[in-house]
Every structure is written in structure tokens, then in C-alpha cells.
Length: 482
Image 1 (spheres, one colour):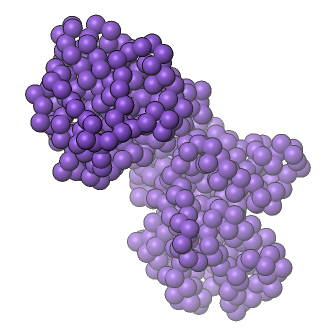
Image 2 (cartoon, helix red, strand yellow):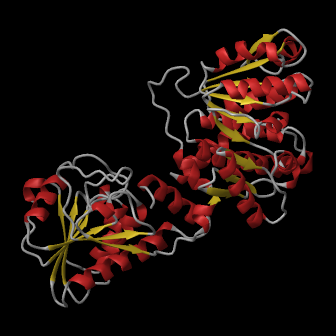
Image 3 (cartoon, one colour):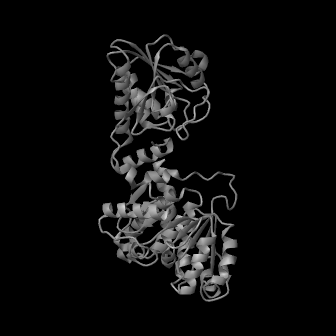
């Protein structure tokens, strides 16, 4: 089963892999035409009632394969307001071919007639809630008719995220849905056909630019902190690592990022950038005596990133155990802090970001074959009960149920600090996203930022080069995808 928003991601990922939406629409239209042929005798009257989106576009394609039937296509709205280029092209193909088409701009002008079959292609998986006009009037007419109703993907008025039906929803007899079933379809008193439209399995397996569509647009009236507050707990032997993570979190969209670190590190950190809010504590390294103070601070943040630059002193790792066992929010665990994760009993949602060496120290098994590694990481995540992101040429992300693979990145990113950047991006995205999705998108964004930096710097790139590229990947590429 797949939700409407997940389907939009898969569609765009397929396009990124060379299977364009236009090709998918052609396959979808074929499937709808087959659905009509299954329920109607040759020569039967068919009324296609279509909206202005891709759902309507699927039906426009279907009309071209229903020459043996008496088909009339009704577009609800003006042709110039069809919302996508591919749907508009397929409408144009119908008008150029002088098919029987009409437009209805006002609900008062809608008349269904007495067709044998109605194709409901008004609203697709991206629409929820009660139907508006003229779709509401059309749905009423469809439901009151004696026609056999074939809905495209989902009945108009069904929420493809929850499966909930609006009171005004179309009552379908048959549903032709694409790629996978959708929430709520199994509960309908309707025959459901799941049509394979040629989306490769890789579009769900690999992280691609379509995954960035999960990022919501920031509301114009949003206030400071609403888009994520991240606390980075790091520093001690190393000052640069927590700075790299904190600046990456800011570039990935977090409103506020604070760094809790030893006093001696704090003075250096402040020099890394005016945007960093430093919360220093006494001592040269993290120790158990700071756990209470840090837990209190952590509870006021959406996510915590723990590990960058902490070092591996025994007292420091004891403090890590105390932090993880006492925290119940979302935490990204990186670097030396990872070694204590398997032994800790925690209520927190963890995103662990080891490289393969650290993964082995956690109890995992190393493999150079990404397919084998995907299976290993999935089993490990199942046992751990947390999200695990194992870095490598192909990054593997799993929560034990869903496993994703990321292919962005390059050999130039073996330079120190790129993992700290990844931890920061993950922390920012996890403030607003599901942990698995946040980790997958972060892996993609970190690698893609590294690829952009590599184009200019080649093997001379350094971790700080990634910071300026992060917003270009997350926001520019997401805009292209949407």
C-alpha cells in the first residue's frame, strides 16, 4: 500500500531515473481503457468526467483507446487552466483529433445524460476533503445514475493519505489504481484493479530528488523556532566538528541551532560564525556531571545531535549513556557516541549515522556489496529498534521495515568533517520530518552537496564547502521536482 504523497515521490523518482511522467500517464491511460473494456460491451456509451489535473490527463489518454465505444469527454473547467503540461497535451490531442469533447465551467451547466459507463477522473490522490463545485454537482449526478462507475486511481472525494471518504465522494463500482493499492480502497464496495504502469522498483528503493518533495513550504506567517530548533552536543578534543554540524543544520532550514560544549571549546566555536548560539559548560570535556543540565536544555529543542567532536574518553561515553537513557525526543547520534547506543535503554527516537567502521564497532557486519549491506543494516535496525544510516559509497538507511539506498556523493568526500555535516542536516530535517525520511533526505542532500562542491574543487574539497551547497540542493532541486 502507498499513500498519495508517497506516490508523488515515487513518480518524481521514476522521472529522475529516466521514466518520465508522460510515459507513466500513457501507461495509466491504457490501464483505464482496459478497465472500461472489462465492464462495457462494444458500442456502449461512455461518459468521461475529468478534472484539470493529471487524474484527468490519465482519462484523456484512455479516450484514445476506446474507439469501439461511444465516448463523450467532459472537462470540468477551462482548458487553459489544466494544471500540468502533460495533461494539457493529452487534452489537445483529443481536440485535434476531433473527439467528442465539451467543457463545463458552471455546475448548473452539467448534465450527465444516461451513459452505460462513467469514468470518474475528476480528482486524484492529491486532493482531500469535501468536493467543491462543479465536482460536487457532477459527483451527485454520477451517484444518482444507473451507470457503471469506473474511478481513476481513487474515487473523487477519497483522501489518499487516510482512506477517508467525504460525504460527497463518488460511489465507484470499479477502481483502476496505479502501481500499488491506496489507503481505504480495500474497504470500498468496489472491484479494485492495481495496474502496473512501469514504475521501476528502484524508484522506491533509491533516494532521489523526488524525496525532497516531502519538505513542506514554509508558511509566510511562521515564527522563529517553528521550523526547527536543534541542539548540538559536541566538542571537547575537537572544536571544528560541532561547528560543522551546527552550520549544516542552519543551512538545512533549522531556525535556531545551539551548541552545548565545554567552555574551552566554546570560545573557539563562537569564532566559526555569528549565527551559532553557544551554550558552554565547565570542564574540558563532556562528563556525567553535565547530564542533568544538558537534558533540561534538550527538552526545549525539537532534535538533538550528539557526538560530533566529543572524543572517546570513558567519562564522556558514560555521560553519553546518561543523556540517551534520560532523553525521550529525537536524537541524531554520530561519531564516538555511537559506541554506547546498543547497550542503552532509551525512550528516544534515535537516528544513528555510523560509517562502516563505526557500524562494525556497534555490532554490525561490514560488506562492500550494497545489496548485502542493505540486508545487514535492515536486520540490525530491526534488532536495535531505531533508524540506522550507514555511510559508504552507497548509503543505506533503514528502520527495520523500510530500507532506502542513497547514491549521491563522491570519493572527494572522504575528507574529514563531511559526516559531521550529514549529522547536522539530519538533525534539522528530523525536526519536521519522520526519522526515516529525514535520514534518507539528509543522505541525499549531503551527497548531492558534495557532488556540487566536487565539480568546482575536485579532490581539494573540504567539509565547509558543502555548507553553501545544502540550500541549493534542498530548496532549488525540490522546487524543480515539485
